[in-house]
Amino acid sequence: MRHVPPRRHAAGVSLIEALVALAVLGFGMLAVAGVQGTLRLNSDISKQRGEAVRIGQEAIETWRSFAQLPVDPDGKLRAYDDIASAPASDVAGYTTNTTYRIERQVTDAAGSPHKSMRVIVRWTDRNGAPQSITLDTLAARTDPALTAVALTGSNSPVAAPSLGRHAAIPREAKDMGGGLSAFKPPVPGSGDGTAGTVVWVFNNLTGMIQGICNVPSGLATASLTAANIAGCKDNGSAHPLSGYVRFATENTQPTAAVAEAPGSTARNLDIELTLTDGRTATCFDDAPTTATAAATTTHVRYFCAIPANDTKTWDGYSTIVPQPFTEPVDSAWAIPAKSLPAQTPVTHQLCRYTPAASDAQAVANADHPYIYRTVYADPPRNRQPLAMPPLTNQNFLVILAGFNCPTDVPADPGKGDFVNSNTLVHQPLP
Image 1 (cartoon, rainbow, N blue to C red):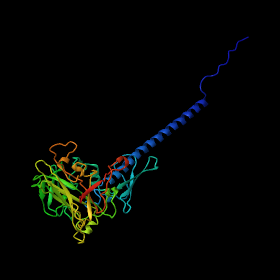
Image 2 (image 1 turned 180 degrees about the vertical axis):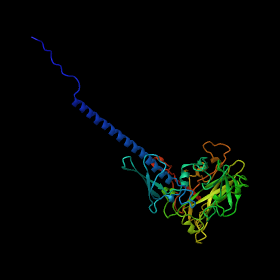
Image 3 (image 1 turned 90 degrees about the horizontal axis):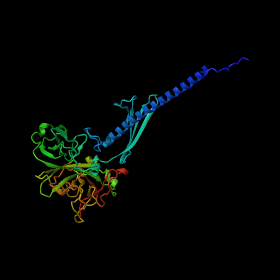
Image 4 (image 1 turned 180 degrees about the horizontal axis):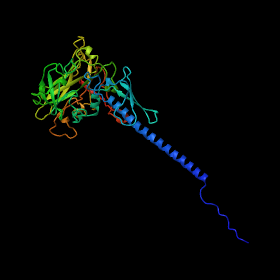
């Protein structure tokens, strides 16, 4: 009988199996391509969102970088009152594959101590879908000078970042080149130094006054030329002292919040600086001289020059001397330097901004003690001799008689408290 070998099955892949495998592979590749497209889109949107947030933050910081409260008539300084809504506009300078549009919305409630600000940045992604981010914040109506006195010492040599010179030099001072800046101190009733004839020449590095000039009346600081200071840019040395006088004269006890952003109208006044060694300081201010002018301002700026001696030191104290308006004529007010008999009318009192808890606490001159002393020029190191640095942000608050100077606690940025608006009685003293 013949032996028949067993039949072997054919090895390999059938056509149907190959087609199924190709189909599975195709679907897998499509899925991978879809995932890659989604990842690319999400990455693109993430980058665009980061750019949009940066645009919004820049807009907010621009709002917050105001240097004064009222609008600058020359348009050189940003002001709190400049913060306002603006229509949507395209943003230039960003290179992502889209176009950003920014919209600014500001709510300024009447009588409110702050403005509510919203920034909306819109764009379309690579698929044409609309995208947007919204940032909300607040800006308090707080004079930068008050914030500065609470957070920094005025004897710091740090220069104003946008001007590259000592922070004690007034911002409106004109850079004359050669490391010098010129400034016309304000004249009462004019709002600036245009009506005056005195020019101070500052050393940009030290912040000290190194020259005092006389120029024709009617010449503004911005119009000064090198010829105006050619013969007086190094004819003497003086220490600058400057600050603000604010007003909280409502018939209620002022609080720390009120002291942080007082809004009462200004009064007419003079600044007096008494030096213990008999030298004579020269002071200027921009106090309003009429009730009409006072209605549009809430503060008075003052500037003093103390002639320097060989050791660059001085001791003394500053006070304000109330003055009546030229109109109305019955606008007299009074703050004696010291308490006087009861029959003397005391309508107001003067507080000074300082972190000190009492007059018994010795603080640096930059922190506004009642009496400026040479030994307070550098308390931590107590170096000798103690040259007195320029002093800025030596600020005051006028309140009605019968109320207490408002007190505050040290600033705590972690809790959202950025300003110590503490004050102590300055005039009249017991």
